[in-house]
Amino acid sequence: MADLPTLAGRLAAVPLGGLARWRDGKPMHPRGAVLSAAVERTGAPGDWGVRWLEERARESAVVRLSRGAGLPAPLPDLLGLAVRLPDGDRPVDLLLSTTGGGRWTRFLPVPRVGAAVPYSSIMGYRSAAGTLRLAAVPDGPRSLPSDPGPVAAAAPGAAFRLLVARGVGEWVPFGRLVLGDPGPDLDPDLRFDAVRNPPPGLLADGPMARFRAPAYAAAQEARSTG
Image (cartoon, rainbow, N blue to C red):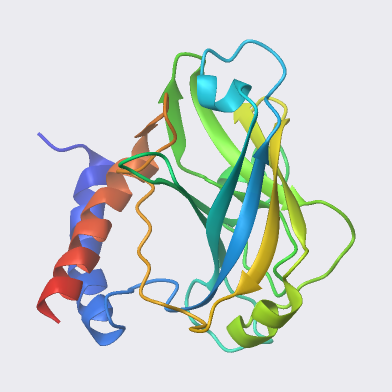
């Protein structure tokens, strides 16, 4: 029998599917800006048992900065930072949302006005080290707008520190994300799936993952039939 988060996700998938058909397959975060980026993984200190978090690497990436409800600026909105990394036959997709930065508020979505703010996966990842969450926090005092056009113009060169934490433990740095230039198309049709495309050694798990899976399926179906 499906658990409560899965059932809630299935119920939410009905209106989300309708919204996705209206918004070209994007029920949430309908407006965004896609940029090139670079990720430098410096390795998380300590014993995590997850090679992807511990190894050093420099990779090209694609980033999408978006407004969750699509509200016009300067209204606050739940902002998104999506990161895609190449990884052989399957990409690695990270979906981070604006949250609080505290021990418990990291689990709570927080609407923001500017894009240079803390983001967290909210969704947990099962691993050999226990349940982990990922985050990105601004690296420096630079401010960023959140509306797609202005953020695309202002974002190149902005940087975020990439962090990992066990449960409600301290955030530990494992890398750095540096934003690059936008492409010729401000918001191409690029779909991220954090449930199906987690980093190696991590498995999307917990209530948020089980809630998200039906919503992703509804948006994918709306995209294919729209």
